[in-house]
Length: 265
Image (tube, rainbow, N blue to C red):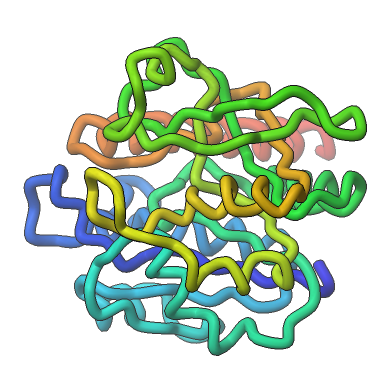
C-alpha cells in the first residue's frame, strides 16, 4: 500500500517465557518460521512500502532470521513500547502518511486485517485507529476505555494497562491488541511527552491515546469479529496454543489447495 510505513516492535526478551532464547525466535514446529516472522510477513504481504523493525534482545539473531528487506533500529534499554517507537523516529521524520505499529509477537495478524485497518483509517480519518477485540477473560491485556461518539464514530478516551487499571476498569472486556494505525504527523510530536509515571516504570505507547484526546483529536477503535486475530504470546502456554492454532490453519490451507487442484483436474 502506498504512503504507508510499519514499525514492528521486536526488542523484548519475553521474560515470562522462562527461556534464554528471545520468544520472537522460537520456531513453529511445522513451518520452522520464527514467531516474529509471522508478523513481518503480514506487513510485507499487505504491500506496506517500508517496514522498520525495532530490535534489542538478541538483536543480531533477530536480524539474521528476518534477513534483508527491512530497516532495523536498536533499542538499547527495554523501557517500553513508547521508547521502542522513539528509536524509529529518525526514519519517520517528514513522512506524511499512515504509520502502522505492530508487536513482534502477534502471529495471527494477517495482511488482510492490516489492509482492512489501514483502509478503515483512511475512510474515517481519525488521528489514530486502535485494533481491538472482546475477550471473555481479558487477563493481562490493556483495557479500552471509551468516551461516547465523535462524528458518529466511537471515541477511545484512553488505554489502561492491566497492572495500572482500577477494579472497575478491569471489568472492561474490550482489549487493546497493540496494533495501531496512526497519522504519522499527529503521532511523532507526542512521543517526547510520554512519561514513566506508571507501575511498570516504562514509556507506554498507549499513553499517546490520552494525549491525542487532550488535543481534542479523534481516536477510533476498530473491533475485530474474531478475537483470535489479536492474541499475542507471552508465556510458554500461549506459545503452545499459538503453534497449535497455526498448525491447524496450515493443514486447512493445504486441504483447500488440494481441493482446488482436484476441481481443476
